[in-house]
Length: 526
Image (cartoon, rainbow, N blue to C red; front, side, top):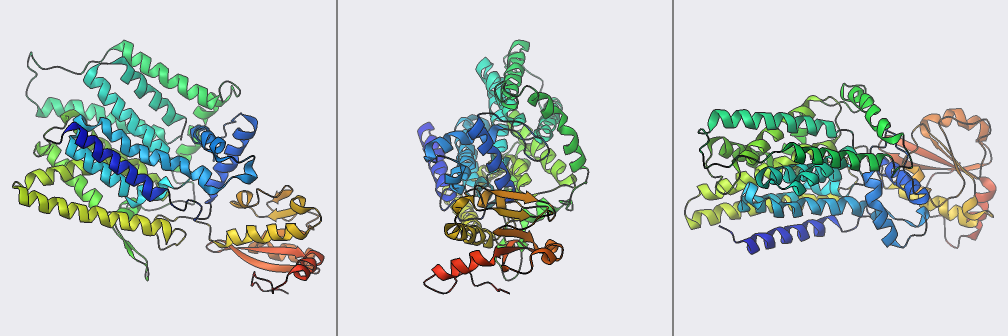
């Protein structure tokens, strides 16, 4: 059996590796619409010290609160001085934290299984890719794992501190994203299933066996801790007293979305297909099949009770049921975005760790085990190579299965172009910019350094401004008003979405006059 210090060293090495693969070039990928929305919302908290919950699109406040230390340490004086990395480093830390939590799971999964799970968590392309997204999924997965870990430790030891930790994590789940109710329902069902499974499969308890220590006092303390955490977050520390009630009312529209009233509707096998095999020619083949296959091996080992020496039977049974329930529920819900699969992929990886350890034990002899370990290491290395390709090469490429409604690199060029124009305009960054689009995100992020930007869903009565940005579908409505007297450029926003930038001719002429070389934007003019 792996010694304690060796096990801890393996987990720490995996955590360092997880950070090493997640941290490089966080500014590389253009800000996704969702990231831009959350960054602007975080700026409001940073500026005013108050978070006003709006459940329509913003989710809970924990992501924003945990971003404040990053903002303080960044040295940025205001929102204009921030970068993508300042925000994205927050989910990166939580992604590394998912690995570190396995330090306390050695006695639950078995040390070998926990070490394999740490490696797979560190290298899974989906876990890596979405750890670099400024959205709630990775923090939610972290707090969910915290509930499972602390709940199991409480049942094992009876210490009230673990009950309080489990309750606090439940509150943080609620204060992170409304979809926490899916995990709660799956946890409750899995716990009931474990009790029935144990009653059916195990020998009757002997007088010397020690059942889990469960007391109403500890459970009540945990529930109270969760409620306190949730209320503090949603009320913005009692500065927005309607927040907690609003968070409950927000569950209704999420049920409606889950029922299919959305553009994000995909078939039941969407997540499974994404994990097993994706190939958009001429791009690479993407697959994380190693993880679900190992999870199946782990589930078989738990059912047969072979190859799980050193694991807590109740915990691994819980993981089998919880993973199946979470994967089944998320697959059954018509509303799907690829990052949501993180919520069942993370427990699936824990089960895959059990499967990897079971395979090594089943190999028998030392040489055979060495071969199995080598094959598993090759598979893990393949996951890591895919993760690097997804993050550093195909980061905004639709041939990458983890890319979804991703803005293209042109949006960065657009922001640079407008700042260059502002440098020529007499008002500088106070130059008026009018953006006309029903869906302008992530423009508010990229125009954050401009001090006078207005947004309209349709052309206003007076559309004129030094710079006017409009989506191509609204161009026919706008053109009759400002066709003459403007220089026009075209920039991509998202696949299939083109933005037209109208620049007042006098401003354009002055810009061109100051250039010492030909215009570098290379766009068509008229």
